Every structure is written in structure tokens, then in C-alpha cells.
Image (cartoon, rainbow, N blue to C red; front, top):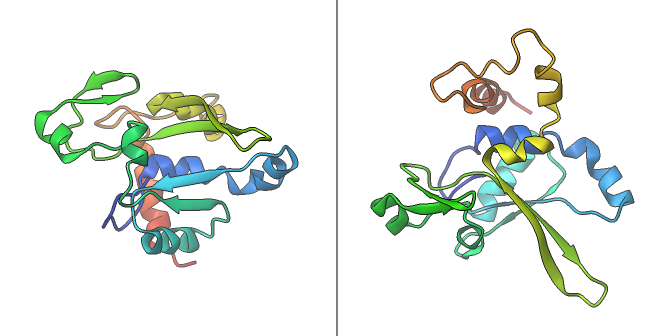
Length: 166
């Protein structure tokens, strides 16, 4: 969602987590927690979270292997070799040090934690309720830009949000 020394978080991740704050009370009622993870140091994360007015937990995996273990961040050697694993397949990460991913964990009564589900890239669309609205519009999602994906239209709004004063 945000790497070290980035001045702002990923537009797609921003769109996804913007759906969450209104759901937190419902999550709690169903014994569910929501936590976002980013490689940025916690002070950078807190600045972004406060600027956006988000209430959900957002933690730092800075200087840990968490994001690498879940194949959503890529080590310098993977970038240099143009070979990494993402979405359960090899690909060329090009200049992307981080990509999106969603994981579900279950904590049993005895304290054991189980990783029960993960999805990456477009698989995360199920967490983006806004798509249900856009898919009904005559113009649809308007993914007509250079990448034919979410950053083509979400980046504009993120830039707007980034510049607004809260």
C-alpha cells in the first residue's frame, strides 16, 4: 500500500481501504478485525491515515519479511532479475516494488493463527463496492487509459484527495 519513503499510498489500495471505515462497526459485530499492512515506517503510515481520516488499523511491516513472504513486495534482486512471483505465477515486476493483495486469517480459541485465503490484483475487486455502481453505468469503469486498469481513473481522484486539506 505504501513503501518506505513514498510520499503517498497506492491509488488502488487507497480506493479499497476507503470502503472500510463505514464497515468497521459491522466487522466488529461479526468478530472480525481489519488491518492494512504497508512497508513504510509507522510515522509515514500514521501521517497518511490521519490525513485521510481513516479509523482502521494500519500497521508497518518495515524491516520485516511479511510483504515478501506474501509475494506483494519484491526484493531488489527480483527487480534486477525481472523475475518474481505474484498472483501465484512468475512475472516481471518491472519498477513495481509493491503490488496489492488481500489475505484472510483466522485466530482459533487456542491462539493459533491460520492463513485461510489470499487474492491479488483484480481478485481484490470483491472488496471494491464502487465497481458494482460503475459496472451499471453506460461508460462502465472507464478503464480506457494506458494501463486499462484501476490506476487509469483512480489516480485522478487520489491526486485530488492527496491535495485536499482535512
